[in-house]
Length: 90
Image (cartoon, rainbow, N blue to C red; front, side, top):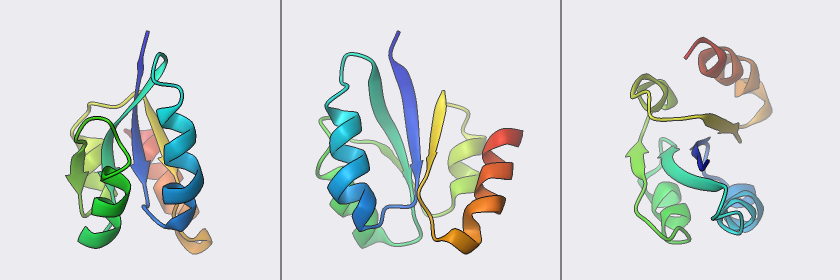
């Protein structure tokens, strides 16, 4: 089984650590969606991926699309609780 992963937040830690680590698990995981309000940050992370992900400016829209098995929360600390609750509800 390949887990479909969505990443909420596309900051440097995602670009330098999370995305490369998840890409290395290509036989078990695929990043299929990215959510970040910045077009530039989404593009920077999308460049690292073997297939083009769905892109969203708002994580709630990504979660509502219903295509995920896993959500990686990588937003600033003050947004953690809201993102986690939204992901859990989805």
